[in-house]
Length: 140
Image 1 (cartoon, rainbow, N blue to C red):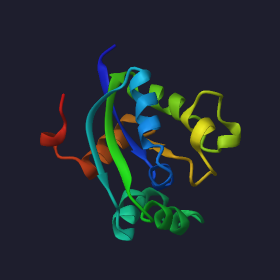
Image 2 (image 1 turned 180 degrees about the horizontal axis):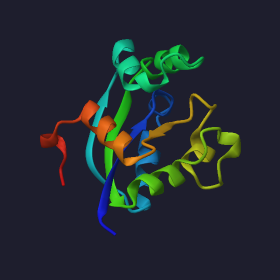
Image 3 (image 1 turned 45 degrees about the vertical axis):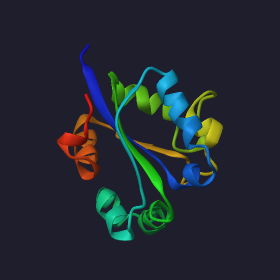
Image 4 (image 1 turned 45 degrees about the horizontal axis):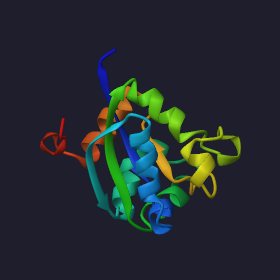
């Protein structure tokens, strides 16, 4: 199976609690290669653009407020079957339903403050990677 790229965010809640390093350690322990990474603080407008697919949904305003509330770390991860593997390692969106050993089970505080984001499909991963990184920033 060929190497695949996916996009991930260590969200503001994890960064503000000082657990980003623990999340990164779990990523690497699970065989992911970090091929791009940067810490940034999204503006409300940037968060709205990134989550545009959810515009009009009841949680859109709260989500974009939260994602622009503090620094986050955006990453491009690479591994065989990276999208499915990252989603499995993240765990269910609702941490109460997440499997033991997943990032959300261990670190999430709520459905919104659930520590991490990940792409759900190849098209989404391509869009999300390009939203934050140029091709020159990917260290493959």
